[in-house]
Image 1: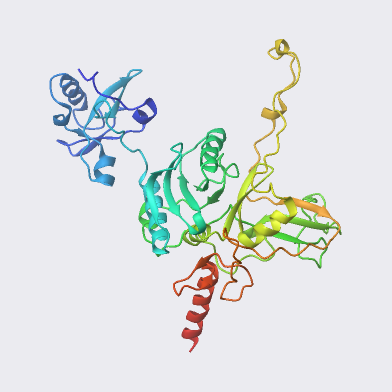
Image 2 (image 1 turned 45 degrees about the horizontal axis):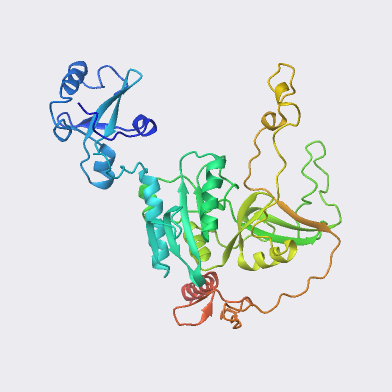
Length: 418
């Protein structure tokens, strides 16, 4: 029999397709006739091979492994609750077959290639230094930055993702979790970006831009008035019953707002390639505020640190317990109050304004001149943005990746005009 083989888990069995080579078509194991002519007789033949014919010669193979990895991986039938399912053929101790979708693989390959093309070494399926985390893509950035790219196309629990992020954070890794679903439980729970759900064929073409729709913030501050910098008071949400309300309180605010909702949004669309390169160069920094994660440009991060103090990066504030107080013996009675935790609908965590301060305007002391690990002053960017450089360019001069790109775009536009 096939009892000496190492089977897939029940979750993996559920989603495994199976291809029958003699008929050159996939079988539908949920149907009694397998979805092919004379399927009932074929099932009897396949079952009669168990224990008599080696698995490699039964004609059942994995179509995903054949199409995506160009490997012929034999399969055999396993019954679960009266339903026949297909399992990969592995001897005990052999490495499990990867169940990553083609879109997942394409995203990893694309990000690794983009990072390599911009001078940052990248490894696919690499283990962290402490061995507790396995990274889909590990990128070695500037000034010792280790960036981990983790595309998440399947549903995961927020608790599980927080635990995985904890392993990476304690290992000194800056993780970038890439979601396509705006309602994914991980949005805001971990440092993230959100990109559109694209087919693998589109992702693999490097000239195709992949837009970043969420996860990146900017810091805005100013007088809360119609003539000020803020588009609306963060403490006065829109009131449908009073649509003509001005929406300003007359005070002063310092807030974090998603880039696409900011008063001064970036001139060019932020793409996944640009974000990964800038994060590896240290030009985008992850933050955590009141349990919500996101990314800030480096210059905005410095202002954020001034407003929140030295513990801004961790923000390990204790959360109120979600367990009701009272006698444990009374918690299962019929007249117990409805749990306020479960009764409230889950709040969408992405694309929201985060208030840092609401107070009267005050003067902020200028930041000290930044220095590197050896105490040497960090030179300013050669393109005149006025900020300390994050990397050396191709000519060996201090610069920012974003500033170099803007300069190249300007020169290209001027050349076309001439």
